[in-house]
Image (cartoon, rainbow, N blue to C red; front, side, top):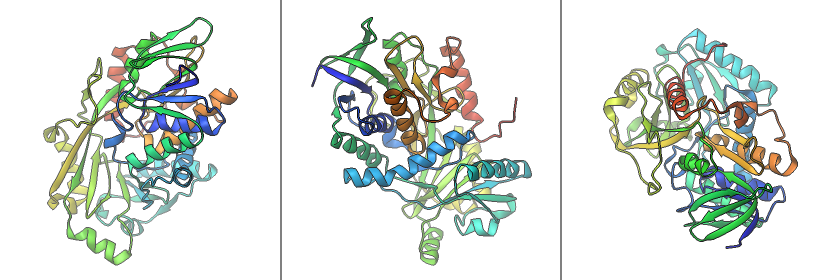
Length: 413
């Protein structure tokens, strides 16, 4: 391992791999990624792998579109399949208030070049046939929605970065980041020290701990997040045979649900109001490719609403329950950019939707580092929106609030 570099990216999840790839694509090739274990360990490996363009901030939505369109590029360069299933998806409105919100998102999407359209509930049933249309008033369709293979995407970014000249070191634990007083940094690892012009914190579940090495207390918190994989049931096979397509994605805001086909069954994910933080003070370094114990009692109120709105799901057996930690920021958006007063220190943290946003985050940060400008108005993601007032206590409360309100409309002021 070299002891000098233009940039050291800390963290080998999908975000770290994307940042490395985009830096290399912009011509910064004397760069390396350090991963304490193996690529994807942490949150990336157990992600549901869904992607979509809709976001409350239109500029973030545009970067999500970029992320989705990037997968073909990195597949071709790396030879690594991303396992993309572009099924399209519907967002369902249970009342006129939600429908108005969706029409607003559609209007924003049009001026950003997103191909969204309003559709009738009968048309929406041709995308996902399992909802009870008496529970809804309308729907918006996004043809870019789909899902992918988290392992494949992360390795496609990583292989592409290596082809362009970047280096990746697994089993390399960062133990300290020390400012040198001249704007450069010393990164201390279990395999020796590295002198670098730039440190990029893409630590994922450990971003808080990596930040503390530099004297930062980043306002992030990991939350337990459930999704269920059902056993096969005949309605899925019937839809596939009749249409020649997979069952598309569906988001039901009123039931706090996202769902799609998985093999011959379905995946059901929920952002329950009765949410639970994971390791609110310190993430253990020995945590890796592990899952947390399912907590059916906690998500049962959400499941009852889901079964009411998607009656076919009630009789499908549960094949696997996945409960894993994901890191969130206080408002649910990523936190990226340079740290004020810390020349050469950059962050790309709290990116819970890594397979919708990872490419856009990598592009933005690489533009910023190489060209001095992020290339777009990304205030909604700029880490500068937070300051010293965002203490651990603040983050703990606001992240919980945001998680529990993820599917609620956020009215102005």
